[in-house]
Image 1 (cartoon, rainbow, N blue to C red):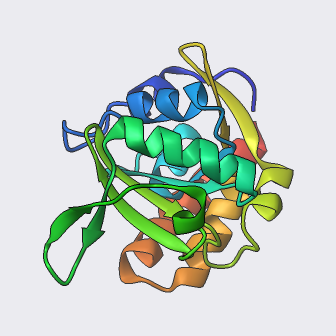
Image 2: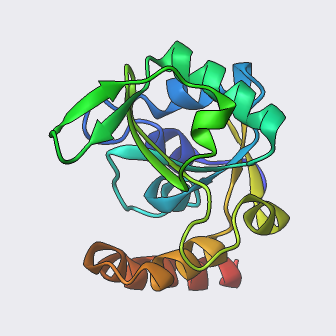
Image 3: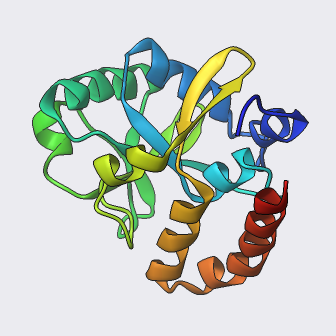
Length: 179
């Protein structure tokens, strides 16, 4: 896909204003976390007009990476969102804890961050990393799931909001293939 255009820069300043996606991604980079950006942010980085209020990533599940991820989560002030309590709960992050679940919905000091170890329709990090595109966002190198993989995942979830996004993503996919 090459160098990102203004769309990638604009995608880093998404609604609500409390989401500082670039700060989250910079923190992950500082801690050498291996991951692939997925979801609506991934689509936006490909040029989609979709808006998002969180950063969704699929982390590499290897123990060394989970240790790096836990350090990044501590720096970000990450708390686990507990839907039953309707609040964020403080945790002491470590690799063992992160292995306990396939998905973590987190609230950080810079916006919401979802860790999805096996996004719907995929086999996880290794599957997504094969076709991921490395984008440069103001000097920050970020691996982003291919648009095909983002669409595949959104098709597999079956959630209404994902189904609503599919026509927009398919139009973008066609446009990018024509270029």
